[in-house]
Image 1 (cartoon, rainbow, N blue to C red):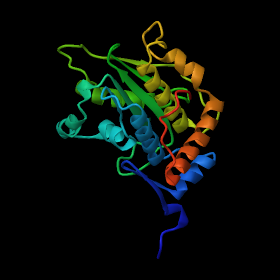
Image 2 (cartoon, rainbow, N blue to C red; image 1 turned 135 degrees about the vertical axis):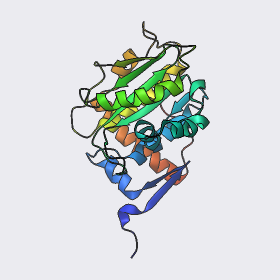
Image 3 (spheres, one colour; image 1 turned 30 degrees about the horizontal axis):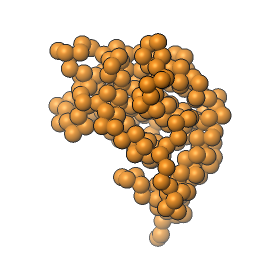
Image 4 (cartoon, rainbow, N blue to C red; image 1 turned 120 degrees about the vertical axis):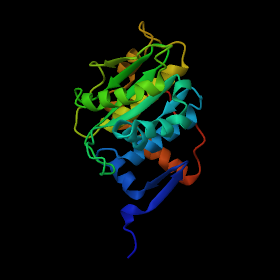
Length: 237
C-alpha cells in the first residue's frame, strides 16, 4: 500500500525532510511539529552562520532534558562544543513520555547568552513550561559553563515575554523569538540596558507577527521547492 498524500515528501533541506502534512499545519490553526521547528532553525542557522551561535534541534534538546545517563550525555554533546558558543537556543517541549516521538502540547524557548552568563526562558503561555525549562537548564548548565572559571549561570524565567492569544501558536512564537534573538546578537545597536534582547522581542513579536510568520515560512518552503530561494532570513519578526 502506498503512502498517503499527507506523508508525501515535498522538500529536503539540509538534514530536514518536510512532508505535505507540514504545509497543512502551517496553513491551519495547528500546533507546530518538530520538523517545522527543525526546518526553520536550519534556515536561520544558514542565515546566521556564526560559529558562536548554536540553535539546538527539538529532538536533541528533548534528549538533553531526558537522558538518564549523564556520562553518555557528555560524550553525545562533545561534538557541539557548547563551551565555545556565545549564544545557544533550545526549544523546550512539555512532553513527559520519552517513548513518544513528537509528543507534548506546548513549546517555549530557553536561550543562553555567555557575556551575561544567563539562561532566559521565554514562554508565550504564562510560563506553563517553567518546570520543563528548568529541567533542561539543570541538565545543560554544567556542559555549557566551566564552573571553575565562569561560575554557575543564572536562570531567568522572563515573565514579560510576548504572549500568544490562542492555543496553537506557541511554536510560531518560538521561531519568531529565535529570529529576533539571533539578529539581536549580531547587532551592535539593539542592546538593552541589561545587555539582552528583551526590548527587541517585545517590539517585534506579537499575534500579527505570528500570523505573518506562518505565511512567510510557507512562502520560503515554496521558494525552496522551486529552487528560487537565495536570500537570508529577514531581520524582522
